Amino acid sequence: MHVIVIGAGVVGSTTALALAERGLDLTLIERHVEPAAETSHANGGGITPGHAEPWNSPGIVRRLLTRSGEGEPFRIRPGALPGLTGWGLRFLYHSRASRYYPNARANTRLAVYSGHCLKALRERYELNYHQYTDGSLELYFSQAELDHALDLRRRIGDPGVEIRLLGVDDTVALEPALEPIAPRLIGAMQLPLHESGDACEFSAEMVRCARSLGARVLFDTQVLTINTENDRINGVLTDKDTISADAVVLSAGCNSPILARPLGLRLPIYPVKGYSATLELDQVERAPTMPLLDLEQRIVTARYGRRLRMAGLADFEGHDRSIRPERIARLLDSAATLLPRLADEIHSGKAVPWAGLRPMTPKGPPMLGPTRIPGLYLNTGHGSMGWTQAAGSAEVLADLVTGNVPGIDMRGLGAVKDERVKV
Ligand SMILES: Cc1cc2nc3c(=O)[nH]c(=O)nc-3n(C[C@H](O)[C@H](O)[C@H](O)COP(=O)(O)OP(=O)(O)OC[C@H]3O[C@@H](n4cnc5c(N)ncnc54)[C@H](O)[C@@H]3O)c2cc1C
Image (cartoon, rainbow, N blue to C red; front, side, top):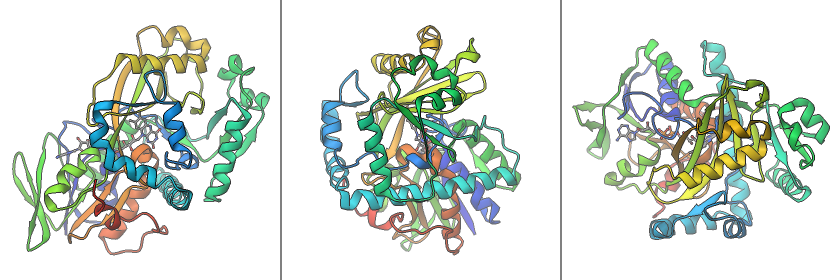
């Protein structure tokens, strides 16, 4: 059986390895000359199953209204509103408690499973992607915010995520870089299951491992159409060649809807822009070792050796990938507020700015599994959780392609119902 995977982001490259491991004849096709050149390139780096709930929790309308704007975590460009309306209404529809909590549970279940799959991958292969596997800290600056987070977790239930509540002294003892902001902190959640790592380096490792198992990898090759014959998949047309296949897995991030549309599938995936800045540190000893999530400023940080990655922001402005200086300034200001000892370095102009588009579904969980077109599978739409869910999604997809039962309860995680949603 010959299977084509479209897209060598973190999702597609991990899927390619999972399929190659099952002995399938595998071709991975990527339009760039290297893996992870788009959204997986410089993301926040966090593997965070304890924070996998979708963004549209009840109360999202108030949060969007009070925290949208140039200096805020969210930004909605008025010109993008027409293209956002259908998706946006569904996003709000899924914020009702009766829909939100099942979606949050499904997303968290997949993320926790993914954590186990990632660990298993590290046991099978020697992987180097600047991984950090000793947990993360979620920082709280007001009791109301902490109470809200605890209530949210209680409602989602116990999907297997251990949480330790820390007071300020214990938080600073664990992460001394936070000492200057101790007077503002009220505490933190330590999530021992959490990890971090460079998703771009990881994707390259996945490609290397898949190749070692015989997979073909075609870079600099753009898929133009997914082909069918007698209503079932029979391959793809690229800008170089026609390649036949028995099955195609679509993992093209925000481009997935464009490739699916000629087949009559409307994938409700909206590109939600986020930013990061990566700083080669001079004063490494002043930087945090643990991955941090600052819920007040809504930014994350992660360390890769001497590099510090700062990421966040959610801009709704369609497929525009431009890096807006004022948004990068907002990100850097937030990071300097969180890490005052590094403020000079953060503002030195050395940080490398980046923007990427999160492939976001309106309900939260990705689109994972077979479609109504025989031979076409989706593994896409992971939104803000693609790095966290990549290893688990790849295992699930490979099990489904080979006719095995996935190692996870699939309730709320399929693709077929979603694909019919009109946007
Ligand atoms: C600022 C920011 C911070 C984030 N932080 C985190 C985090 O801390 N933790 C986390 O879990 N997630 C995080 N995410 C989300 C995560 O990065 C994404 O969910 C993930 O990268 C999506 O991966 P993907 O493989 O689906 O898409 P992509 O990485 O975009 O890969 C899709 C690939 O398909 C290729 N492609 C598209 N069309 C074609 C075609 N026609 N032919 C050939 N190739 C094609 C593209 O070139 C691309 O390489 C963050 C995202 C952003 C923007």
